[in-house]
Length: 337
Image (cartoon, rainbow, N blue to C red; front, top):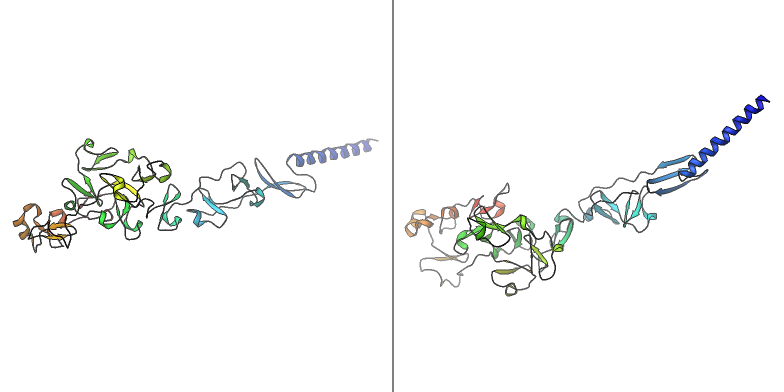
C-alpha cells in the first residue's frame, strides 16, 4: 500500500508538472504540438511543442537616401526599411506599422529621402532637410557652396546658383560704396543699422543674418512668397519687372539685386573716355606696367594681368570667387576674410 501511494504521488506530480508546462506554453502563445509564428506587443516568436524562441529581425542595410535602397524599401535613420500594407509581407521579427516593417513596439526612425544631391538624381533637384526639392529653371535657384553644385553653366554666388553675368569679381564692377562679396555686390557697413532688415554687419559688409532665417526649404514657405532663397521666403516670378525695385528674377524667384551694373559693351563704348576700353562691361585704362597706371590715377596704380589699370587688390587678387577661399573664409573685395 505504501508503495502504491508513493507511485500515486509520483503519477500525480507528473500530471501537475505536465499541466503546468501546458499552461506555460498556452500563456506564452504556444500550445502542445504547436508549430507557428506570432507577434505581440513585446516581440515576434516562433513556436513548437516545447516553447517559444525570439524571431530576430534581419539587419538593415545602411543608406543615404531612397535611391540607395532596394525596390520596395525606403531610407530611414535606421537603414533601408521595407514598405508594407500588412504584416504578412514583412520579414520575420517585424510587423507593419505606419506603412513600414519594424520590430513590435519600435518606430522606423526619421525618413531620409536624401542626404546628398546625388540621392536626388543630380541636376534639377537638391537635398533640403532630407527631402529632394526641385530647383533651377523656374523652380528657384539651387543652393550651393561651389560652382560644382550648379549646372547649365551657372556659378555660385551668395550661396545660390546664378548665371555668370549676374556675379561680380571686383568691387569696381559694383555701384559706388558697394563691396564684391562672394560674387555679389553688397553694401559696406560699420553698424547693423546701415543694413537691410534680416541682415547683419559682418566683416564690414551687410550679409544675411543666419539667426534671422525664415526658412531652410520651400516647404516652409507659402502664399505670396512660396520660394526659400538664402533663408528668406520670397515671391515667385518669370521676369524682372514682377519683382519690383531693388530685386530681380533669378530662376523663378525674386531676390535682392546684387548684380554688377555694366555701363558699356564692345559695340557701345560711348560711356568710356577716348583712352579707355570696355572690359566686361566697365570702362578701363589699358596699360603695360604699373608706372603708366600711377600717372593716370594713384588709386588704380597697378597694371593687372588683364592689362588694365586696377587697385592693388584687384591687380593681385587673393580670390575672385568663393571657391578660392577655404576654412570658412569669404571672398570680400578679392581677399579671403
